[in-house]
Structures are given as structure tokens and as C-alpha cells.
Image 1 (cartoon, rainbow over the protein chains, first blue to last red):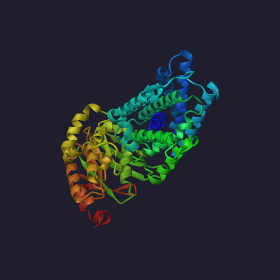
Image 2 (cartoon, rainbow over the protein chains, first blue to last red; image 1 turned 90 degrees about the horizontal axis):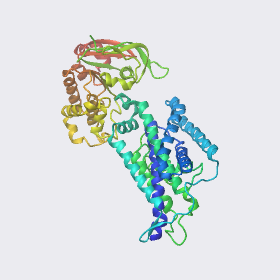
Image 3 (cartoon, one colour; image 1 turned 60 degrees about the vertical axis):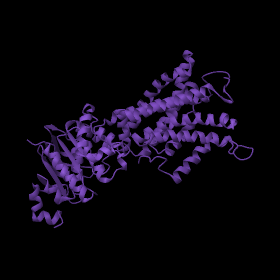
Length: 294
Length: 234
């Protein structure tokens, strides 16, 4: 039982929290702009490396570098929107999707140029775990969970209780009707990019704190982010957060020895869990847990 | 002095023109009903005024300003509200959030607007926290019209407000339309339910193939034998 909590449940929650933040970003962009943004993973990577720049350059902790990483990532998303997505605003979703793939490759190329392909890390050495009775965990895991909860709450406040958030949800429901009610569409789109980029940077830095930095950091979890967003009902941020959390837990818990001695699923196949969940959702509940937008 | 004036409007979606020269005039506080066969361009004419369809030729002026091809999002601030036929509420937002969206461009007017909307449609009070997507067609129509009235516009355009509603709701909506006009808010309405709509209209306009076919006082349009045969089912 303790083994389940210490080695599967806690890591699952941490991974799920990171997936949740990534999935909310993907879902927001999809809801407001109606396309699957393949550059979201690389925005995460960019955010993580932006934090590394400040960690290595000024000797601050990655937590202190987080706000700076957010501020560095938002202009990247806004510039990509201005240069590539805005001229294609009325194009088919597939065109935007492919364009976002191009943007993803450009961002990744910048990361490769600046830092090369070798893994990097914010800290050197081994941090001993903290014990709470029999339960042991890394302090950073606690911070990541608390941070993700705080961010999720902030996004909830924005969407549910502010005028700008209502406008974003109105756009997700029906862009033309939103326009008719006087919502400044261009401004709401820019705000959505800013929020999504901030979420990407936070998820990227958290993931890099939990693991290590590689130029593929964000892209490697993009499938999980999409699966989480679709599981929750695409375009529904609250659903995406839940979907991401479920997915992270499913991935970690899948390798617990539920039956017999060995792991239920070899940890090497973990990445396949997101894919399996995605396929099952699309077959049995394509609208997601909460009905997604059209 | 007319509030809305459309002159020789030609336009449509993409390459094809659906409107081939539409003229519309609405005076302050007037109820004007547009009737015509399917595909005559009734809804498209409204969308052109609302800024959702591109106008290729002709001009539209509202309250003394040229609004031809102006962005849809600035119309509500000018006092021109529009209720589309389908998808006329934000389904995932609550009733109250939908109404609040009606005052998006002037948040300070929200409290007064909500008060007015609930007074106009008391049925909505008990549903204020329900998602608009969970409501019946008639209730959605109330939310949509209530949203359009939030800022006390000069003109509200209703695209088939009674489509798919029971006769009871149809009468309620037509009754409310008269009440809206009595407050000095002009109403431009597209209706399939032509006879009862013309009965409450000051003016009736018949469109055919994207052009004005006939125009007269509402009751006179309904009484015209030729129009009756062609557009009102005998």
C-alpha cells in the first residue's frame, strides 16, 4: 500500500498536475481559435529553457525564474500568432494545425541552437526525500502540486468571474454570436494566447523541475496534453484539467503490480497509455467527459 | 428621419451574391417585418446590416452614421442589437452570464439591464443559474432577446424569433415585440410565421430572390391578394 502511494500515486499526481496545466492551455486555444495547436509542447520547452537561462545566468532558483520564464514565453506566442496564425484566421483547421507544426519546429530549432541536444538540469546533485510518517516524497513534488492547484484556481477565477474570461468562453461557444455582442475578437484572441503561453511556461518549468531539460521536453508530452483535453471535452478547460490529471495517474498507476508480481504494464510502455486512452475516448465517448465544442 | 436605411445592398458569402439590391427603411420605434420564400435573402439581409456578411455594393446607414461593412463587434455599441435565428445563446454560459454578455461593451449598465431583462421575461428569474444550453427553445429565445435588450438599443433585429416554438410562445414573443416597440425600440424582424407577424407590424417588406418585391403597411401586405397567394399560403 505504502509502495503504491510513494512510488505510483504521488508521481502520478505530479505528472497529472503537469498534464492538466498543458491540457488546459491546449483546450483554451482550441476553444477560442478552433485548431489543435501543435506548438504548445514546444512553448513548454521554450518556457523551461527560458527559466534555465535565468537559473544559470543569475544563480536563482527555478521557482524564482518561473515568472521571468512566463514573461519570456508570452511574446513568443503573440509573435507566432501575429506572423503565422492571424493571416490564416479564416483558413481550415487543418491548415492552422500544420502551421502550428511549423511554429513548433521553429521554436525547437531555436532551443537546439542555443543549448544543443544534451540534457540539462536546473540543479546538480541528489535531494533527499522528505518523510511524513511512512509516506516519502520530494519537496519539489509538493511545490509542483501546490503550484498547479494555485494556477488552476487562478484560471478558474479568470474564466468564471471576470469579464474577459466570460468573453473567452463566449468565443468558445460561438464566435459569431460573441462578435455580435460586441466582444473585441482580436483582443480576446491575444489574451487567450497570453494565458495559454503562461500555462505552457509553467507546465514546462514544472516538468523540467520534475525531470530534466531536453529540446523534446514539451513535445514528448504533447500527445498526453491532447489526450487529456479530448478526454475532458475539447475546448472545456475544466474538463481538460480533470482529463490531464486522470491521464497522469493512469500512466503511473499502469505500471503498479496490480496482478501478480511484475508491473501490470512495463514502464517502457507508459507513453502508450495516453494513446490508448485517446483511442478509447474517441470510440466510446467522442464528446469527452464534458461535451466539447464543435 | 429614418433610423436604419439600407440602399441597393448587393452582397453574400464568398463569390456568390445572395442579395441583389435590397432596400430597407426603419423609423425609430417602428416594427418592420421581412417576409419571403426560403432563400429569398431575408436572413442574409439582416447579417449584412449586422456586419457578418460582406456588402459588395450599396450602403447601410444607422442613426446617421455609415455602417456599411463595419465590424460586427461595434454595432452593439451604436445601439444596433441582433438576435440570430439559430445558436442565439451561449450554450455553456448560464442565463445570467448570457444576459451579462449583452452589456459587454458597457459593463456599468449591467445591473439596470438585468433588472429590465428579468422584468420583461419573469420566467428567466428562476433559471438564472441554469446553463442556457439546457433550456427549451422558447426560453432560449427569451434569453437571446433579453440579451439583445440589455443596453436598451435603438434597433433590435430578430431573425425568426418564433421558429420552432409552440403557438403559445409565438404569441408571447409577438406580444413582447409590441411591448419593446412601445418603449421606443425599433424592431426589424424576419418571420416565416408571416400573418401574425404582419398583424403586429407597422411595415411589411416582401423579399424575393434577393430583391425587394413589395412593401406596404403591415396589415396592407397581409391583405394584398397576390402577396397572400404567393407568400402567405392563400
